Amino acid sequence: MAKKIKEEVIEAKADNELNLEDNKEFSLEESFTRLEEIIGALEEGKIGLDDSFKLYKEGVSLVKDCNNKLDKVEKEIIIINEDGEIEETDGEF
Image (cartoon, rainbow, N blue to C red):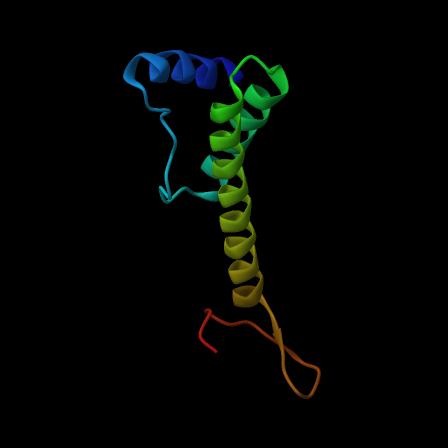
């Protein structure tokens, strides 16, 4: 995983642009995979500071997106009504 990002960084230096996944719509699984790649590359420490910062920003964005998706799913699954009874919903409130 970190190898993939390291290769992107090497190619990016030639192209003068790092291949970030700017606001691409990922599934949760894809987001977690991308986060693992980013973490691996950052932990390896073989990329420059600028590229590290770009990857860090992408990772923070992915974490926020994952949290929003998980919150939405949680709300769709269960709502407790005023009587304390559990109601399943489809996300419409």
